[in-house]
Image (tube, rainbow, N blue to C red; front, side, top):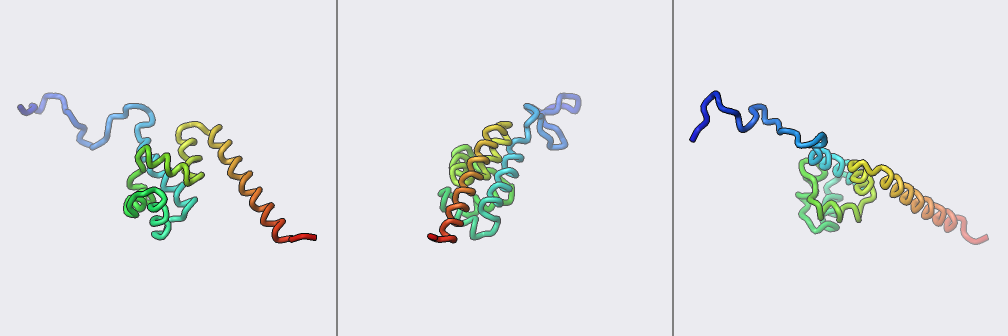
Length: 128
């Protein structure tokens, strides 16, 4: 059965999707946010893609797609990424409008960095 010209159109001709909620583009946003966070933590070179692939247990091509914002990780992959990357964890929490949790995580990161810098400085100064 085919529709006549006067019947309702099943698909929009422009290719645009009907927004289910105001954040309908979350998948594209997630891919972009994960890409930026991975580049921040690991860099964007091919060697880093192989390193991330080994951490995640996925192919380097998959990670390259993540780094190019073509795709984002699935749910389980995102959780594993959040374990290995503080930038990804912070970015995802901010994307979920959980800035308070992201700020607590960021302050913990800064505290760890400060602690390691103080220890390195103490090692550099040596015993008196």
